[in-house]
Amino acid sequence: MNVIIANRYSAMLQNLNIDIIKRMDGEFSVDEIISTFQNFYFQRMILDITALKNYKDIKTLQKLSISLDMDKVILLLDDSEESSSTSYLSKLISMGIYNFTKNIEGIMYLYNNPNTYRDVAQYHQLDDVKEVVVEKFGPSSGNRIIGIKNINAGAGATTFTYMMKKQLQKNYTVAAIEVDKRDFMYFGDKDMESTSNDQLGNTIAKYSDRDIILVDMNNSNAAQAICHEVIYLLEPSMIKLNKLMLSNPRALASYKDKKVVLNQSVLSSKDVLDFEYESRIKVFYNMPPLDERAKDIQGMDPFLLKLGFERQSNGENTKKNKLLGLFNL
Image (cartoon, rainbow, N blue to C red; front, side):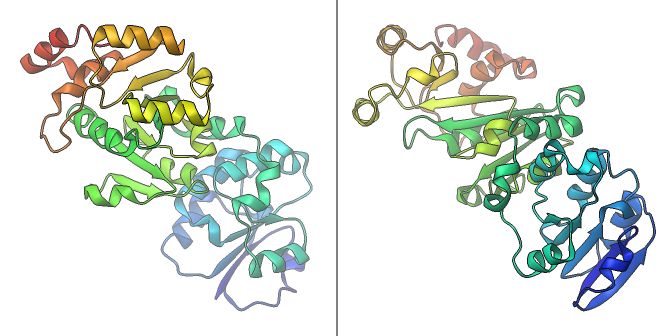
């Protein structure tokens, strides 16, 4: 059964050939709509955008997207300059709102054939992804979104993300998100969630109250745009480096100005200097193999301190780690 919320286009929506369980006519605040339908079961919601007070402010739609399943919502747009603009549509897409149209035929098509990201990607301006996220919980709220991505296959991004979260949560509120894979389920941590590239913005919004959100990016374009910074992991074993360079001799060229971390590395400081000279990239940190099962992964602390997480320096063990980590890059 379906829901209709109508205002200016009420007459048009009278002609929809669908079963209706609830209909509301008039102009409503986003809080009224959320409180009415947040725990209300419906198959589809047809929402006349003019029924939503202050709909020209994209933050109004953002608030709605955080509280309702937007995969079930078909948004009927008006002809106003604001809601018809490419930027407005792009921001809707960044919030996971893919089903929007301006006519009755479009509503019926989307009712039977809901859009995916691929269907609306041509309207998406990736710069708007970060703007939408920052408006809700960006730098002004103290929230920091950090992406973790492998340079070479099997460099350990998933486990590295887990260990970062495990150590950071001793001093901060932290959540971790994995994009387009399901490996987080093996850690058994309720604050580690797997999601799709399409739903990443909505998933991040769920954790807007956390100090830090870690994103195991995999190949997500949305994550690349949303994250405030990205840590690139490279496992420097001979076989993995040679495989990488044989597949693409210039594979490391694009990481010249990035935060590159040598992960699970047994390289000495001299080895790292030689690597930097040969690869022409600056290594941000040389991370030795760590035990993810340890209750206190102290080997992470010097790296986290270098990232600016100063609360990690709050104990004698950490002071010792700082001393021992002087020669890590």
